[in-house]
Length: 340
Image 1 (cartoon, rainbow, N blue to C red):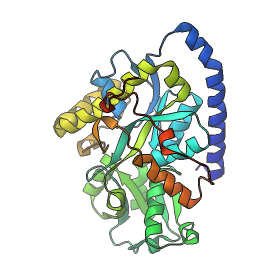
Image 2 (image 1 turned 180 degrees about the vertical axis):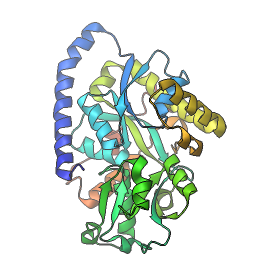
Image 3 (image 1 turned 180 degrees about the horizontal axis):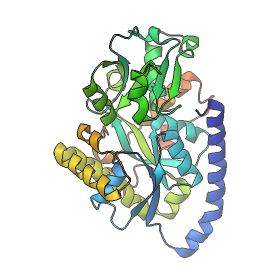
Image 4 (image 1 turned 90 degrees about the vertical axis):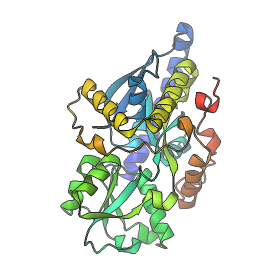
């Protein structure tokens, strides 16, 4: 499990590497006058991301995606984008705030996942568990997909609202567990609480014997929680590619909302079959929405200012002056009238 110190080291390395990439690449791109038509990215096992859906629907035009592997961590994904190992990555907006506060040259360009009544992260305990309240979590283990991101922010919000002190909150242990193993870890009592979302959550609920202690939807209502980011130098060199990508992702999100659920799921099944990554598609039947709040993935200022305020309150930004409007742009999104 990556420690907080290791995570900070990764942040620093990501920023330094990205600075070097930016300094080395601008001249060649300007000389060639060509824009990228292939975007490298990381996927997720057994699921179809909005970017993958956009490509399959033909919304990316001549821009093609190149899958280089899978990830279960938003912070890792945007670090990989920062260092140039991939061209775009996605993460919880609070994680983007933290990486940007460390002077990473990245900008959020479109929302890609969020929270609504159907798409939420629940923090589940076994039926009959002695854990009934936030205070009961002291000394207990909560299984999450990664540290320093969505589940950590939601959990600490829940604990803070329940009146726990910082010292008490520090005694609640967050443990990294791969999402596909989280339900099993809970049932085998390797962890006390399991963060479950999307199709894996509904599949676990179908198995019975668990119930949520708290959810992000109950705490905060509907909101766009995460965004795709691109490196600033990439945006500068490839404005048309960026506009095609961002607008295409937004159109795919809108398509998923306006199309009958059964048709969306069938499209997902076809995509999994075509990409031939030897994935189990049984969980797709539980898909309900991407949860993005608003048309076309357009980013609202509050979707970053909320987490800047929260991170300032916890001291994690260490007094750094971070402005929400510096972290994102809707300039490349046709749904926002973007005209890059």
